[in-house]
Image (cartoon, rainbow, N blue to C red; front, side, top):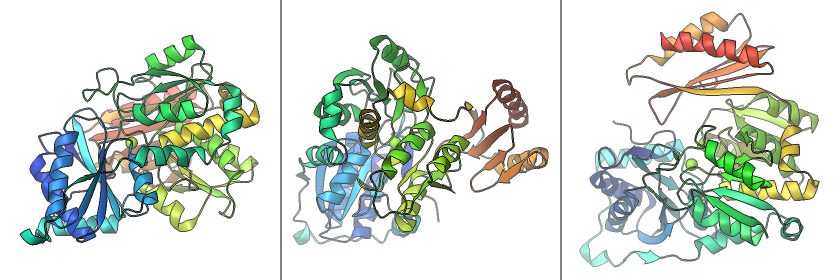
Length: 453
Ligand code: MG
């Protein structure tokens, strides 16, 4: 049997792999999986081909007797919150998240708004490849696609219910929102205005070509945003990815702060709100050691998982904890929902700033300091990743601890690094941290020569 789902839904290049014929069949498989008369909410991000894929998936769903409700353009977490709170049986999101502009994809959510489990994905794959679709008779094809217009309003009020709106309003924060030229531009400015902020926007017009920057927030792709944040002297900048489940912050000093930094701060802040959850957080093995260093002091435990928000979300939901996050800016706040949510993360950061009476620069600066370097190395489809992993183990195992939860992580007294094959692109992701810049550069050179050979 072939493989349909990757780490984060079904993705492919628009009109090459991700063609309407495929989307139609996926729609039929999803509809069969949920069962006729179930109510499914569908939305999309601003990528090219989004409308084409939405309609193909909708046609597939309708053929199985499912009732389809279209929510339109919005972030993935907005759709997810809508599924959960408006009583839908499931959701479908047309998005390729942070992938390059030429990609699009399909994600499936359960009634709680959380991405379905690997097991459920296998069930959909089984239906897809065996073509055992539930096809209702013409007499039963009663349902047309209907509009669902309540989602954004419901989502925004959900976010506001978890923060001290009046206290934040009292601060009159000046913020810069980088919407990645996609759907974060629709919702995050509403949240910011409701919180009494003076709102500036960059990359907030919808552009499926992503000409201004790539849909993935990186230090490089946010260079201009950080310059603008600096010259406007904003209290906080926030940058999303293509479907706005991620939030990367730019502090009041204009510095781009990575997601494990904000994750550490917001986990601590979440611990002051959460009641009844075990006093621990879940984060991917790719997070910085500063998370443990900082949270241990606050009496909060840190548990590591494989990289991938779905793993974190399911682990957090099943085992319990006050928050979950990835260093890429995906933060899960369970009181709101068990998925990453860029606008919720943004509101929590303003809430923390207002409560502590400290600038975002001061808050981020209170964290332990590590220098970080993140790189991507392109690989061929047939590259034997285990050979690379084994070579790294043979070189570095006598220098520190080897962690193999996901990829190879080496932790020594003076540095740590993670080398891991991406689940969504043909690349190896490399992350190195050290408290000393020279050590960082030296390890970076060493790894480049190992991975380049
Ligand atoms: Mg995303």
